[in-house]
Image (cartoon, rainbow, N blue to C red):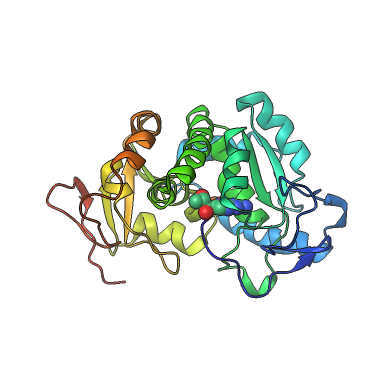
Length: 291
Ligand code: HBI
Ligand code: FE
C-alpha cells in the first residue's frame, strides 16, 4: 500500500513498523521470527482469517480462491513465510520475505523486480482489526499471496517492480502507483458468474469486500491504462470508483504497452478525481455516489 506510516506501530525485534531508523540489512528484510508470535497475535489473525475466508465464495475471483486453497494457510496460526515461499517458488518462482512495515520505494521495487514479496512481519492489534494504514502480515499475506500463485499476477507484479525502478528515475512514480492501486490493490474482475475481487486491499477488508462487489454507490468502470493512470485515488475511505478487468490476462497488456506509456505521456492531459465518470468510459455500473 502507499499510505504514510501510522503514529504508533507496534515495536518488534528492535525495529518499529514503518520506522525510518537504520535497517538491520540494506534490503530492509528481517527474520520473520515465527516462534516469537504470541498466542494473542495468532488469535487476532485467526479472527481476521475466519471472517475473510467466509466471504471468499461469491466475492473473490476463482484465481484468488484457488491460490488460497493451494497455500499452507491455516486458521489458527500466522503463516510461516518459509513454508509459503516453498509452495510459491514451485508455482511461480516467488518468495515472501519479512519487512518491518512500509519500506522505501526503491527497496520495495527492487524486491518485486526479483520476485520477492516484502510482507509486513507484524500483525495489527485486536483494537484495529477493521482499519490500519500500514501493511501488516494479514494484508500482505492473505491479500497478496494467493494472487501471486497465478502466473499472470506473478509476472505483472514483477513488471511493476521493474517499471517502478524506472519511474522513480524519471520522476513519474505517482502515475505508476495509480496503476498498482487500481489493479493489484483495488481491482475487480468480471467473471461469468459476476463481479469478483482480485485486489488485495479489498480482499483483506471485510467491509470493502462487500461494498466493492455489492453496493450501488461506487462506479465500476472497465479498466484501461490511460484512464487509470490519470485518476487520483483515496487512501482514507472506500474507493469511489473500481476498475474492472474482463480477464486477468489484460494485466499483461497493461504491463507491456502500459508501463512505458504510463511514464512517457504521464503529466500531460486532464486528470480525473476518484468519483468521476467520463463519456468515453465503458461504465459497467454507474455509481449512485450515495456513500
Ligand atoms: N512497502 N512493505 C511495503 N509495502 C508496500 O506496498 C509498499 C512499500 N513501500 C512503497 C510502496 N508500497 C508504494 O509507495 C509503491 O507501490 C508506490
Ligand atoms: Fe498491499
